[in-house]
Image 1: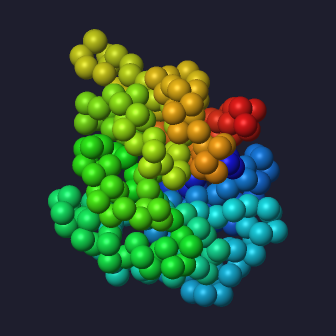
Image 2 (image 1 turned 135 degrees about the vertical axis):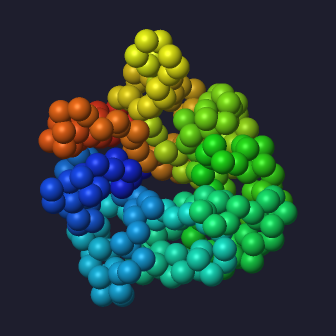
Length: 266
């Protein structure tokens, strides 16, 4: 098991709200400086435009820093997954995260199984594992059914129990249902707070250990150290009223706290 950081931990610092958005090499250097062992390039659109030379530069930078790379995208159309498989080969990646749905494609269980049975054998041949993330658009039981039906050790689940709360699924139930199939863990804590006037709630991120994520219980169920499953830091950090500098500073603090917590628990 290794502990790492995702592009989602740099959400505001790579956004168009940043005066100078962080580059991918800058995120890699920051991850290494914070003690991370893995960097997951997740839903990072610019990577799709990188040519072979630029991908080689990214891989060389990661190698120099002692970082393992992972990739993340959305969708399961075979042509898209195979494009990411090519990128994975260029980067030396052995884990690609995806999600069943995209803005223009929401496959049912049967279609998802058929599409994945076309693409996953190519991943297996390349020694790359594809992980499908738990999230509110797809019932966890349906996601598990898809993975079971494809029945290939190179297809599993990326566990992020906080995502499924919006589907009224309890995090502990998501962990229990997916544990045998987990190949990657996204670690972010989350909590509900009352809105002004007690009219409803805000559901957002919080520092690891201060919210509703039972991280110890998740680790006990999944056994990442025993099974060689990486844990990747993400956040749901709300924009701060004080502006970009305060938001970026807090984002960095949350990331440092999360990676330190994970490394201490190894």
